[in-house]
Each structure stands twice: as C-alpha cells, then as structure tokens.
Image (cartoon, rainbow, N blue to C red; front, side):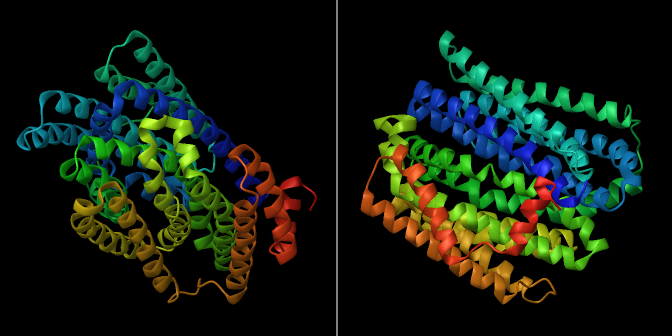
Length: 476
C-alpha cells in the first residue's frame, strides 16, 4: 500500500471515529448542560479543566516521544512497553494524591473536591490509553485507536443519559466520565496484548531516566499548550464565577467539535513526518506544505459559517438560557484556523528534533495568555477569555513561522499564492451568504456549491491535488 493510501486509510478511520465521537459529545454536552444548569455545569467544567492541567504530569510527553521513536525504529517496541507502563503508573499515583491535597489546601468545598478527583481518575485512564494509542500510531495502525474512542463516547453518552433519566445528579455524571474511559482502557489493553504479547514489566532505571528526560520537552509543550486553552475556564471561575464559566464553556464545547478533527491530522501525519525525517527530506517538506494547504481549504469556509450563524447555533444546541455564548463563539471560532496551522508546524518541528523550540514557544504563549486573562477577564469576562485565546494562537503562529523560516523546510511562494486564492474563495462565499441571508440548513448546501465554484474560478486546486486524489482512488 502506498504512503498516500495508508494515510487516507488511517485518516478515514480517525475521521469516522471523530464523527461518531462528536455526535456523542454533542449529545452528552446538551444533556449535561441542560440537566445540570449553568452553576453545576460550571463546577463540572472547572473539574475537567483543572485535572487536564494536572494530568500533563501523568504523561510528561511519553506518548508523543514513544510515537516518534517507534516510527523511526520499531525494534524498540517491547522496551518502550515494558518500561513505559510502570513509569506511567507511578506518575499517575503521585498525580492523584497531589490533586486531592492541592484542592484541600486551596479551600475548595468537599463536593467540588470529590467531583475533581473522579475526573482525575478519568484523566489517568486517558493518559494510559494515549500511551497505547501512541504505539499503534507509530505502526500507522489507527483502527484500534479509533474504535477505542467510539467505545468511550458511546458509553459516556449512555451513562450520562441514564444519570439524567434517574436524576442521580452531578456526582454520577462525573462517575460516568471515569467509567467510560476505564472501559476504553480495557479494550486498548486487550489489543496491545494481542499484538505484542503480555508486557513483561522492567525496572531499567537508565531507560526510565532517558525516557523521562527525552519526553519532558514534549510534555512541557502539551502542558503549556493546554494552559492557554484550559486556564481560561479556571481563571473565569476564580474571577467571574460559575455562571460566566458555564457561558464560556458552552461556547468552547461547540468549538471543540471542530478542534476534535485536529486529532485526525496529528494522529495520522506525525508518525509519517517522523519517518520521512530519516528517509526523505523532500517528502517531509511536501507533506508539510500540503497539510497547510488542506487545513486552510477545509477550515476557512467552516470558520465563516460558524461566525455568521453563531446565534442560531447556540440556540439550537443549548436553548435561550445560553444565548450569551454566541459572542465568545464568534471570537473562538477564529482560533480553529491558527490551531490547525500551528499543529502542522508543531508536528514538523517535533519530527525534526526541534521539540525544545516548540516548548519555548508554548511557554511564551501560556505566560502571555495568563497575563492577558488577568487584565481582560475582570472587564470583559468570557469575551475577554476568548480574545486572549485568539491572541495566543496568533502569537504561536508568528513565532513558529519565524523558526521555520530558519530551516530548509520553509514553505515556498507557491503556497503563499495558493493561500491568497483560498482566502479569495472564502471571501466570495462570505459575500454570498450575507447577500442571500438564508437559514443555516439552506446555507450549508448553498455554501458548499458556491465554495466549490469559487475554488474552480480561482484555480486553487492543481496537479498535485489531482495526483493525490488519483492515488487515493488507486488510479495511479
């Protein structure tokens, strides 16, 4: 199977899983938000954001580092499995105890501590699943990862619905999160054993040391990346209260439906880039440039559509009580474009052993985000948090392109011309949508046709795109 068809196969698996995951997430988000109300939903949002930040300590970048190394040399697989799992168990135990102590010292109420600890257990299971996913990702076998995600989502939706029907309350909502990922972990562990045998745990302290040392830059990047996306919720909770937290998080949850597709790119292309780094610099550069192009091709029209129809979308998803979420959504949707572009560049830099550069960039962005949040949230509340998130993404975009310009992988002028054509196509779409002023359901098919015509007029697609399509279809 050619590399293009392999990428397409894996992308198809991940896409299918993400569609199902997002449908389920759409369901449990609506059910949870409407059942809990703004205040309790704010508590759950705080618990998730708080544990995501602390959860970085469970992984410290081990999953990403494992994927990169095994993509280059699969003979190390058993060494990573036998040593990686014990390391993560130790880190998870430390994390769980630390989370409880920190919440107690900070003076949180007992119910908030209990909810957060339940979500902490879910985070621990997530990190272990991610490690196993990283191994299959290195082998470019994303079928099991995708099915695992589907299993988790279906169980979470089912347990959430059951909790609401039985009126069991916030505690059982949080318990459902934990149980769902535990079931997913069981499924992934089964296939790990089936593919590579029962792990024979090792205590190779020298390997542990190198594993942690080389993983930390990846972990720090993820940690500081998570900060500027998740710290907003925590800071809004402190500064503006649970109601504002619920409004912001309701907008963020809708946006996260689109950010979830970012996983497709990262999961599929990162091991390919890592492999190309040691096999073909030319193919690595091509994969980088085409990834930029296709990200813009897909995301620009989606961003415009959500921006225009944000009031309708929030009312459709949540009801009138979340109407205020339309404004932060209009701001947050623009972060999607930069998120994907920055993701492309992050994968490139990580694959060419520039993970420390990525870490530096995310440290700067995280600090900037926190400072701006402290200044803006007291005045603009959830809208201020949305603005700082967008500014952080733009800052990352600028810094990453600066560092890429110093390497041999800098994009050429052809990509710049293509970007201009895609922007023009999107402007045509925007003008048409404003002029016709139809409902969302009519705008989707009409917009799709208009955008395709605009792409044809601007000649945004070229022979390379045709070759890739023919390769996927098996015509070459």
